[in-house]
Image 1: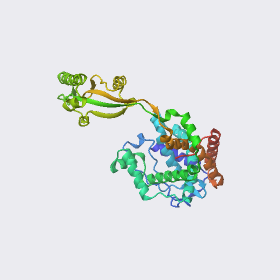
Image 2: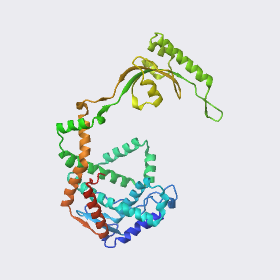
Image 3: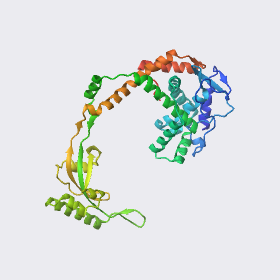
Length: 397
C-alpha cells in the first residue's frame, strides 16, 4: 500500500501547473460529490502485500483541478482513485503482481493506464451532463434494485455484499455514484443515440442472411429414462467407496428391465415398476435436451439411436440409466420473424460504438474543456488523436 501511495502522489507532485482548491470546496455544477476521502476498511492481507488496494487520501491534502468540462471539475484525488481502480482491474493480466511493488515499474504502469482514464473521464462528464439536461435521474429505488441485482447475480447476502465492497475498496456512496453514472449514460444512449438509429426491414433481412449461424436452433433429443441407483457408501474416514456387489446388482436390475421392454412390454409400465428417478411419475419422460450440452459419452451413445430405440445401460455417478429416444430435432435455422427483435438488437450494438463516437465528438465540439495541467492535456490529446485515427468508439462505461 505504501508503495502505491508513494507512486500515486509522485504523479500529483508532477502536476505543478494545476490550480488548487481547498478540499472542502465542492466541485462547481457537479451533481454527485467526488468520491469519499475516508480511507476504506483495511484489507485482510497486510498492506505491504496488497499494492493494488485503493489508496487512502488524507483529508488534509489539497485538491488540484486537472480539467474542467463545462465548469464541472475533475480533480487529482479522483484521478488517483481511478488509477488505483484501473490497477486492480489490470492486475488480472499481470503475471507477477509482486513486480508492481517496485516503485519505478508501478509508476510506469500507472502512466500507461492514465491516458485511457482521461479519455473516459471527459467522455463520461459530457454524457452525464447531457443526461442531466434530458432529466434522467437515478432514484433511491433504482439504486436499491441495482444492489438487489448484484446480490442475486453473485449469490450474496447483505454481509457478503459488504465484504465484497470492502475488498474492492468501495464505499456505498462510491458504488452509488458508479451506478448513477452508468445509468445516466445508458439513458443518453437510448434517448439520443439509439433513438435516432433507424433499421429497415431490408437491412434486418440482409443481416439474417449473412449470419445464419447466429440464429440456428440447436439439435435436440426428446428422451425417456429408466434409472436404478447404486447405494452410496463411505469408509471410516468419510471417503466414498465402491461396492462391486451393489454395482453389479443395479446393472443386472436395469438390464432385465431393458430386456422386458425389448420383449414387448410397455416402456411406461416398466418404468413404473423399476425406475427410481423423479421422472417415474411422468412415465420416465425426461423432456428435450440439447445435444451439444450432453456429456460426450452419453451424447455418443444417444445420437446413433433411432426414435423408439433404447441405449445400453449407462453408468452415472449415482447409478445406471437406460434412455429411450422419443424424438429427434436436427439443428435448424429459426424463422426470420421469430428472431427479428434479436437481429435489431445485434445491429444496434454493432452501430452503437460508431454512433456514440460521432455523438461524443459533437458534444466535445460544443463543450468548454479547460485543462489545468499541461502534462495531462498533452497525454489526453495524444490519446484522443490515436483513438480517432484508429476509428475506435468513445467510452461506453
